[in-house]
Every structure is written in structure tokens, then in C-alpha cells.
Length: 149
Image (cartoon, rainbow, N blue to C red):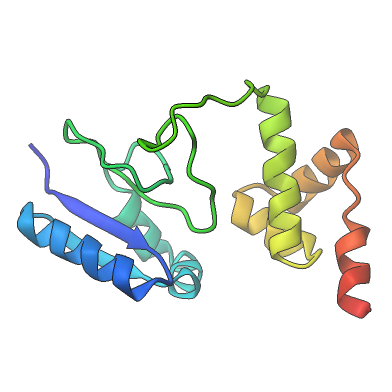
């Protein structure tokens, strides 16, 4: 079996300490980052290669996952109701296109209308982002106007 590693991204010091303790108690290597450190480190190809080696997917949430799952938390995402132990209500199913549109809108808002930075965060090319913004009718200029005001 491969190495155990917990990668934790949070600006909450208390949550980071709890995650560190959890990793130590379970014999896992702990790597904690603030959201700004995480974004900065993702620019380094060697860092990305080290982190992504053997990590099957990106997930978010605070629920404990069992069965040897490998988790790479992603900052600033809502906990999915499907993964929340305190909420058994399941929301309406969304299509992949709806989810993609929401992700694009969130990235554009996160980077204050800067489409180049939003595209980097989404892991797609700038031209692809422009095409999808047009396809989904997203008003990217709204965020830029908010910055000027």
C-alpha cells in the first residue's frame, strides 16, 4: 500500500491543528496550507507533481472518509449535502453544464473579473474560458465594474 498523506487547505488555524492531530494519530504525513500558500505553490510544477502523484480526485468537505480514500481538499467550496453527516437532505440534481457554469461564475467572482486568473484556477485555457463564458451567457464584465466602483 502507498504512503498515507493528508493535504489540508484552510485559513482556520483550529481546523488545521485538528487535521494535523488526526494525521499524526493515523500515521499519515501532514501538509497544511493556507489558501494563499496553496495557490502560490500550485504555480510550481514540482509541487504539483509531488501533490498529484497518486491522488485520484479533488474533493471538498469536512466529513470523515474511510476505506483508505485519498483526499485533496480544495479551498472555498461548499460542503456537499451528499457528504455531510449532519444534513440528510439531498438537493436537486444539476447537469454537468450547470455545475460547470457555476464553477466558472465562482472563479470569475473569486478573481474579480480577471478571466486569465480564473482560467488558471479552473485548469483550462483562457480561450476555452472565453468560449464557455459566451456559451453559458455569463456576464464577466459585471465583476470588473464592481472593482472600479
